[in-house]
Length: 494
Ligand code: NAD
Image (cartoon, rainbow, N blue to C red; front, top):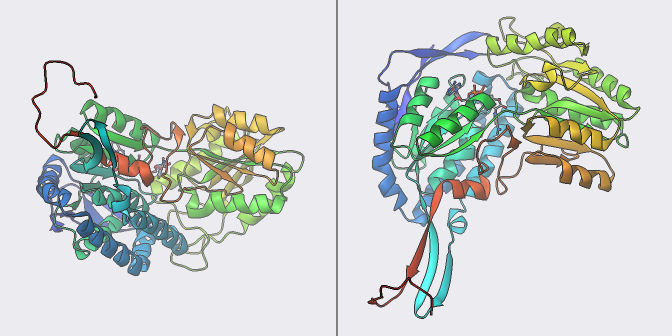
């Protein structure tokens, strides 16, 4: 069994505490590693190193910073298979999905390579006689990222390349459930020539997070995870005077209009609801089916889902891997009884699905509920597993109202060939990321990722232009080439 360590000042560091947490291979249920649970002393050490490195890094020229970014991006691409395998080994998702995760992370690294263009500033010549005004953006100093288990490579890549390109030091507190990807990234940064201390990794759980939030040497916090934790982190960080962005959970809807062929809708729903075992923040977990053809769509989903191959993520035959832990698997499975008790129709029960693989794994096949009512807890709660709920509606406006009444607002999609319906949906729906005939509308790196409502607690999206604004602050200069006496009067323009 592997004994993991933190990554501080360019090397492994065993840390100050003795508490560790287990890391499992979800496909076998066996523990593969023990990860240290960091606390205030580890965070202190990380901040000390990060702060020492931040001054020089922030004054390193843009061209030198970009050279490191380009090397990092190159190493990431060359090592993407290795990184994908690490993700599958600890998260459980199938290898092709892990490869997709790394590819989307690479896009953010690509975007960050253009930092010189992104940081170009404004200059106004002659705002008063002989006076110029201009502004530029400077890094914050030391920023921290706290990331969830479901994208152990991608979410750190949403944050670190941009934070670092902007000239900050970055402290990552990855999920304790699948921490190896973050260590791979740390080594990649070092190999790319990033100075020691600019990218630090402190492992742990709530104790490490609390130490990050309390530390006065950390200027900003980027968080991605569940809504209750996001809400609490936003409040604590603000009370400590930190800049914060906190992205939370989701309940994503896909509305299918009757003009789309049932097989197309069913296929899109199966892929987006059960891919990565439903452990994606943009997974569709509610289908809103409009019109008399809804029964046909439900039957087509059932048939496709029943034929999915559930097995180890590193088996190329598998469509779906295991869930991340036994506790999470049991929590998701418990919603199947809850839904039946609440009166929904359990059309497909994932507990009965055949599994190819070690019986000790954290398995649950795809499940499908029909006749779900928005009052039920299977509709209201984020289940975060392979459970799709079908709600029936009669009109597009009714479907949009159902979505808008839901507190989450991460993603929403409509499937239709009617442009008027598509336009009505994209204008009226209350969600931050909208797909038209695209079930999982994760925005490109140059747009930025962020939901609405209880899916986000900040006014900055993660990555994209908002990411650059989040990791920098603006300075406004008023400049006169020749020293001037001035007067007691309030300065006015002439
Ligand atoms: P989580 O909230 O349990 O954990 C996220 C991070 O917070 C981890 O690093 C964890 O160690 C830490 N943490 C957990 N409990 C804490 C507490 N009480 N106090 C302080 N820190 C704590 O989330 P998860 O289970 O790892 O990830 C799944 C969740 O993340 C889902 O809700 C999913 O929707 C969400 N998610 C959202 C997005 C998005 O962009 N909106 C993206 C990915 C995942």
